[in-house]
Image (tube, rainbow, N blue to C red):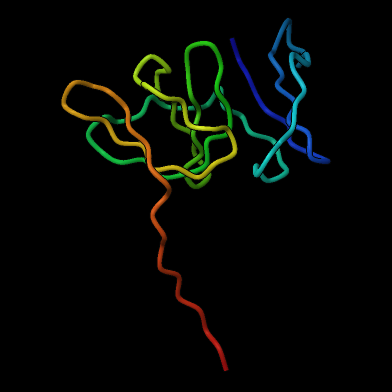
Length: 115
């Protein structure tokens, strides 16, 4: 089932595709998620050997979706002991047993030019 999110005016709209049309399934608060269209159905499965840092944009019955740059990765919901909040920036890593652990996203250094 294809899912996407529309975020606008402080609302997060979850849509699914049915017979070629996008149907609204759920509307709730967007939180810290930036306005835009999030095609989470394009998500690839998370590589369990690396850390993934980005915003948690959606969670459904079986999957947690995280935006990393312009791409999306999916994490199995069953791998989490505690769920990360949607709209928060998190770093997710897996241990040897395949359990997912998250922490606040690490600060990134940014170069800027000033006069």
